[in-house]
Length: 159
Ligand code: ADP
Image 1 (cartoon, rainbow, N blue to C red):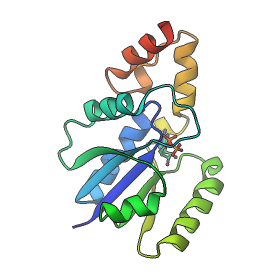
Image 2: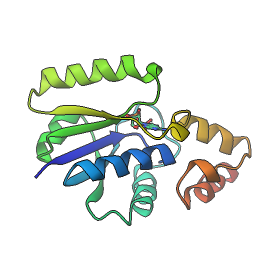
Image 3: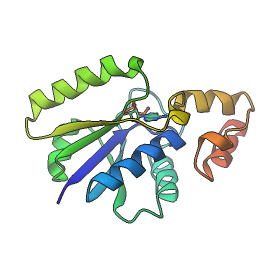
Image 4: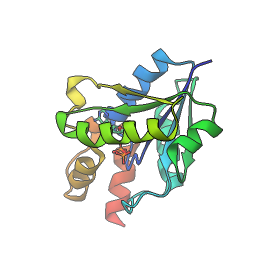
């Protein structure tokens, strides 16, 4: 049984994240998309809102589950009996930080492997922060996020 976790802030979940989830689901028996609760990023959406949005987006994938975590990622991975951490790589600019994190996590837990997946080229320019910025400025985010998330972004910025 190969179980992978896909951690992130997902503020909000985008089509790039969804692309990575589909690829991971094709490779592993079970995938847990897990929302970071202790993010220093001051997220726009609450943890529960982010979990709901991800659940709605992945409802057709029955080997994918959604959870949240706090604290050390490798500790959480062990608790969940996951052997793999999934991360998405968009550009060279992601590489330095991701490489450092992956090596540090390996130092902390030799038996957990980080696997990097690349999204379709269409999503390489996409990030949650650019989606938030577009929404804040009143632009349409429909092409960049799974169904239902554009409406939630509009609601956030109108309140
Ligand atoms: P974090 O705060 O962990 O960077 P994010 O929600 O920004 O959280 O991203 C979670 C993971 O998804 C990271 O590995 C990130 O590189 C990856 N990711 C983000 N956007 C995309 C995208 N458009 N395509 C592929 N991977 C992505």
